[in-house]
Length: 134
Image 1: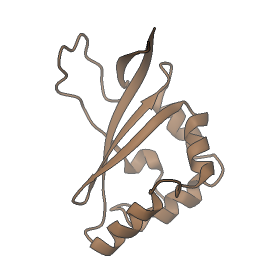
Image 2 (image 1 turned 180 degrees about the vertical axis):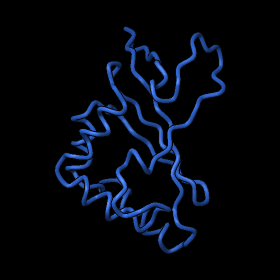
Image 3 (image 1 turned 90 degrees about the vertical axis):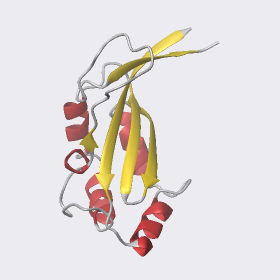
């Protein structure tokens, strides 16, 4: 069985402070993210999310339902319970302002290569992918 979904990749810069980075990692450790934040992401159509760190650069992989509209979903996410509080909390670790929304902080990346790519999509559209289940 095949299932279609969208994938978005984003980056964000952290403050160049090893102690702050250590604290930021603790906020995102297994089971540490606030349940309202995780639920809010699911409620707007985010199926899965991973965040990786290299130096001060965060790299996010966000997988969503096929009908996901990035701008609409990010606008809705900003209104959900505790989202503004979470954004304010994590902003002290990030090179951004304390009142910036997730959409303003995380910059969409353009995909420039995929092995055996069949179609091109813009960053805002998301990359349509297929996963096969047995």
